[in-house]
Length: 229
Image 1: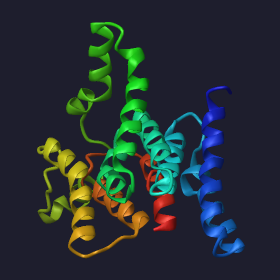
Image 2: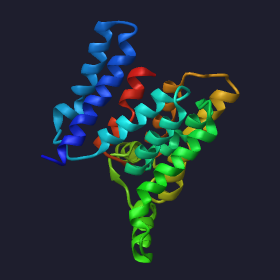
Image 3: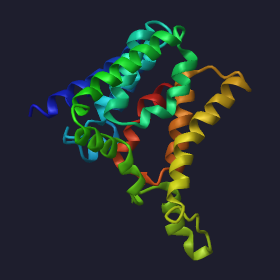
Image 4: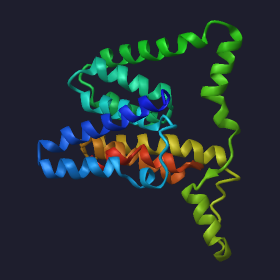
């Protein structure tokens, strides 16, 4: 039960942020959008409050909400989101671009990540396990879940379609991480597109397209940004 409480609170935290955003436009719309988050398909199918994804989503959405208003806090919450799962790094260029006080954001982001990392830096072995568990573990992972390109290959293989995601795992993993930021920066600097939630959504969609690991919980990551963007 104690494990589930932070996840439960984060779930309602995301609801509150969405409700607050849309309530400026329409109370009915705010209730509808908040309801879509609380009663999303993953929640309806299987929700045990055992995975920390809503906590990461709450910190990330809060960081984006505070961006350009209180950049120090935005840096702290972005750091907390990254400390739970590394995936928010795909919108890091967007975070930097929209921050008015970039130095303040970077300082507090660094302080937050350092504070989270310190308990794992007390000995050489601890630090080695920390690096392996947080970063290097992804190099030895295989196709997992229902990645879109592997799913397409499985269903279209009889027609000669093979996207070789299993053979070129590392390349697709790299594309998943860098294609979104590159496309987002292109839209910002070349097309003058400045809608932050939609730009975040672009990065998530690129990640989903190329990612060799795609599980049900991963689809929760972009849901608030889809609803707003």
